[in-house]
Image (cartoon, rainbow, N blue to C red; front, side):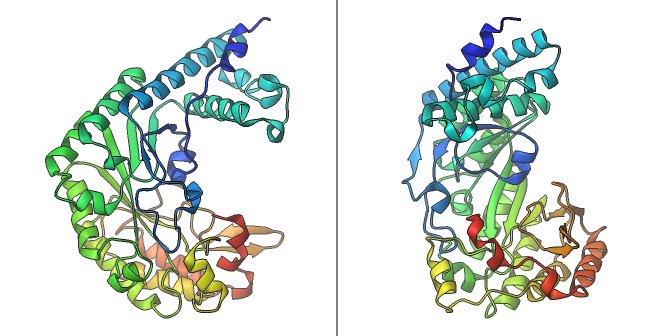
Length: 375
């Protein structure tokens, strides 16, 4: 069977950024890059390293819309291929660098790699139901509201099947008076439905120490503002970020801030020293002490004990607590994207922590063990 559409797939590529929340990867979201990199780039634990320290860039609405057009063209070609072959599962066999480029993945040049990533992203999105899209990179809301609204509407027009459009948002941007509640409501009405915000900690001393560039008060204002505008809100906190010296205050004040916001999701992301960051250097020199696995669990325990929200608490990342059982590793908490419903399942989470504290500490993965993964 001749498949000219397979050859035509090689003609299309659109820009995809380096990161997205696991919940957007697991749900196979369509990735549309609205901005490039991070506008802050100064947090001691990150320092823009996921973006190779490249400077922040706004993309024009027209440029983003061209990428949406390209994703649309790829999706139409994949649908034709799937129809000819008898379904998406058959088409999946052809979404392979050997078929597209006659090469192994590691042999692809930059242009071929960009093409392959674009095709794979659209295919996975279609195969999973074509229901969600994620606007990359670190803070799409820094765009002019009218331009972002234009992009969101264009995206929904191109893909009517979309049920959820999400984005990272910086708390500082949400809290600013220049990003009004009315503008946020306009974005929500256009179709932006969920925001992912990096809280990291609710402790002001620690926020200042890691140079987050935002206060706990601003975090609360930002979260409440997002909720009032109608967004579903995911807040991320980082166990162990305060090391041994600030662990207790980190846990208690994080719970305090989250209680004041009452987000839909609280997502846990263990702190792992990242190379080429100042906090990594402090750890390497012995100036910053990581928590042991049991110390980290006790910190999580303190946070959970003080947490009084009506949302969900999630541990949906492989860097969260895991222990060795035979030749395998087992996560202490479940890894799904909906996590544990609070307050109903709060006792279950605390019971799991108690269970984890009864496991030999030497069996747990340590943050130090994950450094080489450059998370």
